[in-house]
Image (tube, rainbow, N blue to C red):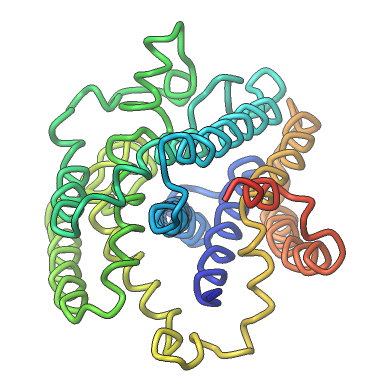
Length: 355
């Protein structure tokens, strides 16, 4: 059964990713870090990646479960499932990097590990995760949440952006993939594991208590931020929550907010009813079903823009805001048209051939 709220979550995740990446490539002139627009953009960006990785973890887990429950689940069958997915995701990451090379005004080196290599790594773990019990995956999630505290300086606390996206040799590349890149396995695999748990805890009443406890801790972190005059959340620097590197408070807060969003958008669909918004939000669903393709292709557009904007003065707030909104929203009608006319011509269609 196709779950419509899952497609809507995918759509929200990918559209938020497009928004934050667009805002990063064409930042407006005259916007300080404490400007309301900057705060809104950062808030959207802060939740985009956790949501995108979580929904990818859910998809990987459900696909692997179907594979394990089929009659054809021997080693060679698993390799036919794992290898193509791993290869396609890694190649997509290299393509994205090449579209936004630093030397062309972009943000990456061609070999930079990123969110797609994280998903490729998660694919390798898929056959393992489906055999772990719920309690074991809860423990694994907790360990991943606190992993930034365990690895300490290995997370690249003082890294500049250039250091975080660069690697000299294979050992540094592995370090960026696992410890101190943009989306390293520690702690970002927490959201992959969260995706597997959301699938198993859909009807579990304890989820409500977990969310309530989490909101209390988040509130306490805000109070701590206020009384110690420390920013509550920053992309990087001295704050309670940081994204680069992703610290434990950020991972924990994102986990709770992702659970809330899943529960909210689910509506009554799991009991045979409608997801939140009923048919009124069905226009979002095609973009959700095309999320990987949109993720890759929007970087191609941003790559051209970054190249053309090299050494150019920043645009005004309103022009930048308008372009960001247009570039984000245009993928909705494009996805609808794509699904109507050429639905199989996509990275998703390619992946389906290996189910």
